[in-house]
Image (spheres, helix red, strand yellow):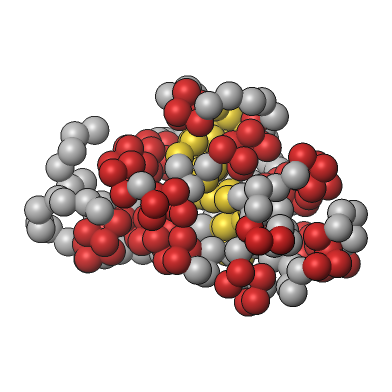
Length: 239
């Protein structure tokens, strides 16, 4: 893919510019159009209908609310199970809720979430078309890094959400999300350059939006990752 503004980057251009892109203005397309699923689909997921997927996600959210498997359940304001379409083809996984997320019970609603929304718009989608979740469903005190025991306690919730949504592409945001899903250690920069899968989905590794806010020079690298995720969505079928 070249560095020019791709044809699917539409009237959300201002969002793309805010993300740090410098593409020239050009023909505008449909901003949040649905991307059709590929003609060749693998074996059906156990969750077979949108209603069943929504019911499964609602049940997981109730379990998250009741969970006290680690100490975070006692110190949170609200649990943050996740948000988005039960039929999403693109699934974003972050690290843990922050202060705004803890207050509202929704993922990525602070400054990093505003940037993530612009990143989603930059590939021609609306936030409502994707699913967004975190490895941890409760905020760690003072926004510290997730503890291994906390990630282990929450991981089953995340894996069940992925199974319920059955996305084509998963984008991990930052090292903690990447290591949790891949179950391996290693530098994020190296894992970005590798091809990964998580179950039936292609997995694309990129930087967390909070890191991009601190290191705006890395937005260009994150944009390359987003373009790769979009190209995988546009592929005719999943292998």
